[in-house]
Image 1 (cartoon, helix red, strand yellow):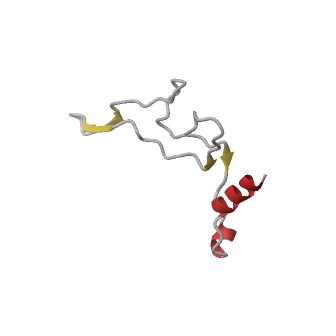
Image 2: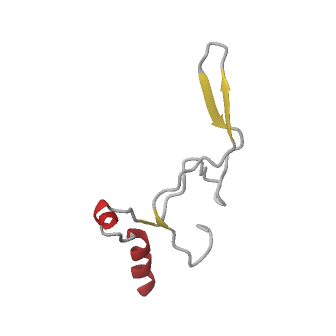
Length: 81
């Protein structure tokens, strides 16, 4: 979606981890984990550690206590502009 014109990504950085994680144990007992298939966006930027939003919006504890969805409200305000 980030590559599409007229799209604004709102929220928090995504969790990443889309690169087919591979886990194994070494002979000495250590664990190793890495992406067996790294993922890139259209600009060849690695997205393994998530995608940064255009507008960062986080759910606040105050809004959570009031049953208000901070992210939905921010999107509504954005669309009004």
